Length: 153
Image (tube, rainbow, N blue to C red; front, top):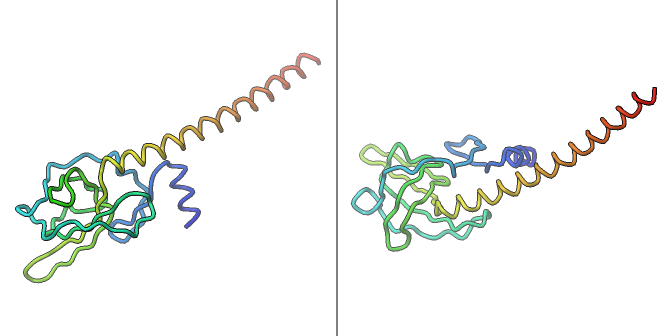
């Protein structure tokens, strides 16, 4: 897993597990949908804050009627007393029976997710620029030494 995290870090993207498969993708670049989730459009209960997150973001769990477009990275607007605004689906599960289907969604505030990811991307880009500058300086030094040797002959 550390190798995968290293690759994701180099790609400047987070790791996710949609539909049970590993993805390295930056969902902050996804477009907002025109879907608004509330009690009239399929929300079955208030979003509940979750305490088990290790990514520094506040996660919420909400149960809603099944929608096929409820996938990891989907951005929509939620309206409830607990949570209102644009949210991103971080993970979720679906349960379909003969007569109905529900989705249990793990949501994060989209603006906070985007801000957190942009900060980590900027940090990685700064690190890349510093590393590139060091390599360029070393290459210039080698080139100058090589040119001196040629001139000395």
